[in-house]
Image (cartoon, rainbow, N blue to C red):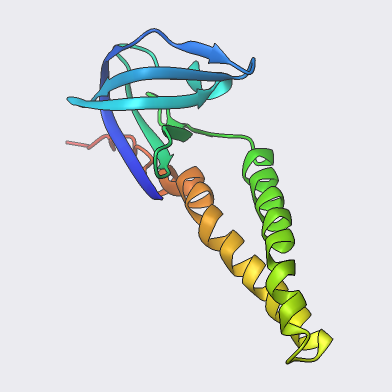
Length: 157
């Protein structure tokens, strides 16, 4: 998984397809002279991706998945981010699935370890894997905070 930031003027977009009532999927978006293929944005963030606007988008890209827009820097410099409920729900679901998967080796570990040690090992493994799977989502959500546009200062003279 990787974080990618695309910055510049939006020159073209393909027609967006709305799925699940709240996600818009584009075949491509041309921004800053680069063509970004397979882009997904929530309907809120999608409203800020307009042809002719100078924006920046922060995306999270997984293996085989589309670029998921996590934040947009608007032309006026404001940064709009995806709702926090999305990364939190993703983390909770990933942790729950990994705990269930970790139960199998924990069962076999009971034969050679104490129950507390195997439980701590299984939960630690699940928490570590959850962090590795979802850290880019949180980082992409906050990546544009450091790239905000600073208004030019008027000089006397």
